[in-house]
Image (cartoon, rainbow, N blue to C red):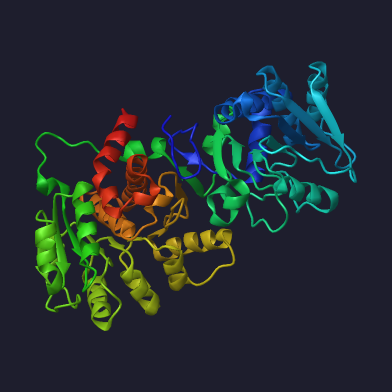
Amino acid sequence: MPESTSGGTCRFSPNDMKIFNVEQIRELDKFTIENEPVPSIELMERASRTFVKWFMKIVPPSKGRIHIFCGPGNNGGDGLAIARMLSWEFYEVTAYVLHIGQHFSEDFINNLRNLKKHRSQITGIKEGDPLPQLPAGDVVIDAIFGSGLSRPPEGYWARLITHLNSQPVLRISVDAPSGFFADKPTTGVSIHAGNTFSFEMPKLGFLFSENCDRVGDWDFGSIGLHPDFIKREKTPWHLLDFGEVAPLLRRRRKFDHKGTFGHALLVAGGYGKAGAAVLAAKACLRSGAGLITVHAPKCAYEILQISFPEAMVNVDEHEYSISSIHEDLSRYSAIGTGCGIGTNKLAMYALEDLLEKAKTPMVLDADALNLLASKPALLKKIPQSSILTPHPKEFERLFGKTSDSFERNHLQREKAAELGIYLFLKGANTSVACPSGECYFNSTGNPGMATGGSGDVLTGILTGLLAQGYSSHDASLLGVFLHGLAGDLAAEELQHEALLASDIIRYLGKAFKKLRGYES
């Protein structure tokens, strides 16, 4: 399977990778046990084998002793089965049985019995016992609570988690870091994992920035949970991966011509920011548009003509700023604006004029968003199915502050539905909220793309895809994925620190090639 670099390696990739909440995952487990049918202990074996297969790729047996901390529930049962399987693979393993509460789950007890048969090293820990000191360089596997907690850890067990976080070891969590809440903000103590491996699908909380230090680098893999349940169960959240995006990509025919692929208009650039127009225009044609016209102030004319001869330039009346759009917009199959236009009164007048005249979906980014934020009444004038691409600060200016990423995601989906738009929130896992209420998280992209001009490139790609006749839905998903994928391919050669926005454009062709190769 192709790998992503934005947090997880996607091992299980049907055309629709859904993200379920914790209660839905419990129901999925139950449905699988009842309808496959499969005993719960065998499902646990299946999950543990999947974890061990992944673990062996990142931690060699020579790494040091593996310390597996096992809580009393099924997450702990996973840990005990993992301990047994790693022992078979010649890892030095110590399993710690944590006596939390009065009872162990039935599958935990069965796995503890199986582990004892293999004469593995097992240590019990009861409340009040001295906290274990672990040698530097060893590995802790966290199988204490998983995603099963309803409230933050307290008392001795919270102190144990804090202690494990302080030890000079690599911490790896099974399914979810203990103390971490997948579906709401985590306010208490949790394991701070270097790596987390989730079963079947990632948890929603993995995708939000405030959880980065808790989750670490996350990965996931299928344990064969029942596809009928996954197919029928509803969720607003999806992970965007190759399997979802590849079928969207169109193939070109022998007798197609530049008119087939549309004429895009970019209203972009200003004094000192002509480069934004250049980047967006190049990305627009690199994404496949047939023709592009850039409407820019007079000061950008020579820059555009020299740096990008493939573009046509429509010169504004004003020397340093866009001020008005005096032309027939029906000539264009897509319009993008905002890149480098500034937030002065002339730019505001031009944006209002554009919103009044435009009859087709637009792409609005950067200064266009800041202008909208300064005059919220204009939001109602945005053409239906337009694409807005704010970063977190621009989102906040548009729609107000939120207390955490869960609340912000709810607001993002709410505003997309209310305004009938595709509303991005750019970041490590850029999310795309749709008018339907669905939300897609991108799995491509890397920190090297956190550089000036990357957003202009995304605007160009999206405008170019719209110009070719892709729907706003398909252009949004395909565009954000290709943008990140091109960045990933560039980073493989150039490294994160050296990556420039223009490198994303340079690698777009390779991104198309890789996506088309997956499809075939």
